[in-house]
Length: 447
Image (tube, rainbow, N blue to C red; front, side):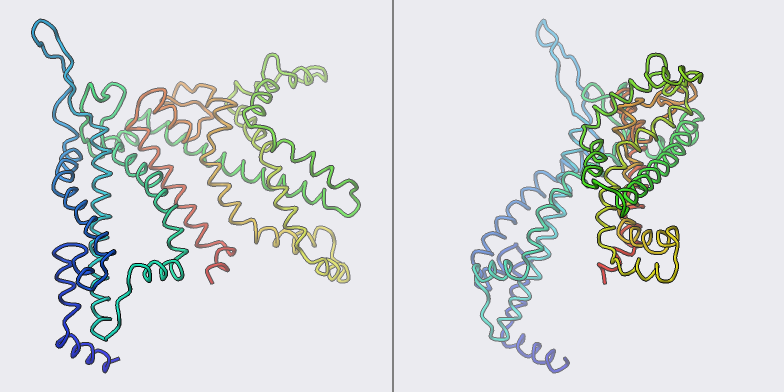
């Protein structure tokens, strides 16, 4: 290693290709590559350099100004001659989005600039050793051969950046503004308000009472929905896969039907079935002498109804997955257990359940995460109702995600909705990261 370093230093003194290439690349992207006789790559990087100059000179100052000020000129009426005309001012939201995109593009260009310098250095170093630098076709062939997975993964990565990370950053920025329906661009300019909205969530009694109540119900709902869906599917899968059961394909087909029906149709039917006044369920209960149950109008019963409805639409997927896992468990394990005198419960507890959990654990955690964010069932079945007078724009069955929807699309409280969105993001990303790092299935994959 030391000898190699000494040789490199000696070569650098006699043929300083890498130093010249680096200096040229620092002056302008692509010049180092042109010096290294990589003409196509150099021209492409020069084009990026031109884009970078345009971005940094003409776009970035305005983007930073927009992000800092959120606009300075209001939309207003001005008298032109005898008539008043509307003179458009700055649009704070557009300024925020444009500024965000420009700043992100600037970071990408800085990264390309850094990598071009590094590339020029590496190629110059190879030239000092007497190696011939790759031309464009050789570079393309190298990438296609050795970097193909990274090349393909870069495409969805760009989508993740623009359609996931950018909206998250935008949502975080909105949480620090006074963006509401009463202060909406372009009629009004937005202002940065710091952590005022976060403080209001926790210090104003009505907001904090709503937040803690909805958060608690969100976690209770996620646990109940996940557990009932999983263990319901597990129990039905065990029954269907029993040795003595005939027409297993028919049973599996019939039991998967709830999953095949569009959810809004299922929720529409269930909404009518659970109707407190005219629903068939209460009519049948009345026939056997049981009083009507306020399925959707009482806070507690409405929550029970949601869990039942979720079980109905979620157990088929768990059942199918678990049936697939059960078919992979070696039968000799059960035969050995039979020889040892194990009961059916012991075989289920010691063989079947651990095998199922080994494969299902990541899906179970992600199902829990999905139920925290389960907008559809709550919105279609109860719409967050019954109304709670002590809550701020939320009902007794609202989850964080449905409360966020009401705050943004019905009440125009975009800044408060953004704060709720940030909490949801922190909760979901925390569980998702924990799922990847802790569950055994992913551990085996990482090894």
